[in-house]
Image (cartoon, rainbow, N blue to C red; front, side, top):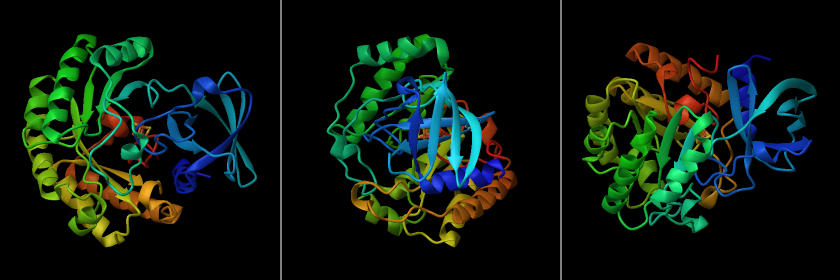
Length: 322
Ligand code: SF4
């Protein structure tokens, strides 16, 4: 089976049962992204390809750890040899840190507001980066909103100021103000990701009450002017109830601005628990649309230095997942 096909099927299933030798060092316990706050997840890699799967002892897919990271993926009667990757914080190769693990908003697909996490101090964040510095090539920062959007932005700017000492590319993904792109760029941030989350404004207002879809588009537009092409990203969730045509329009609108879409299969948690995950067939269809739209706009996800398009764990990424 080709990698794109296998990854689409694995992402559609979403979870894996982990067996074999103890694998604690390979388990990512995230406070962001799919599986946040859950029982953990693993990154299974084959060559330069990888996929992140949430751990679930009841999953019909198994990964058997043979020791030292060597692992077999058992899927529909076929064994595929690969390896488990050791996460930095949250993902391999990057110190990907959630600054504030709680949120005053309550997007319906997100577990962060329910996790009751706290804000990390700058000292803690520096200590975390220090501890993985020898095996990461980038720092990525995301955050919930502790008190207000403006206050969160100020705190993240403070964090970034301190992290510049590491001389690593820094990527930032937060809910923005209209000044966020310029302020982050002034601090030397390499890449930004501002998430539209939903393919249409109607779905966005249902899913993310209190947040502003129009502002996100304006900020994305400005970000490309400030950071340049191939340096601005936006997550759009696949499976919130949008049609393929709506998703295609959203993808093309983003790429025509110079933004690289990150098409994230729905992980049905929080209020959306029980919603079906997108099928592998749909993910592959959207992948083909995504690939064509990026090529038409002259965008190349292989150039990403930080965050999800560099990581590729949770999504099919054109140029990387062939
Ligand atoms: S793709 Fe993004 S959300 Fe998923 S593990 Fe990688 S960095 Fe985290």
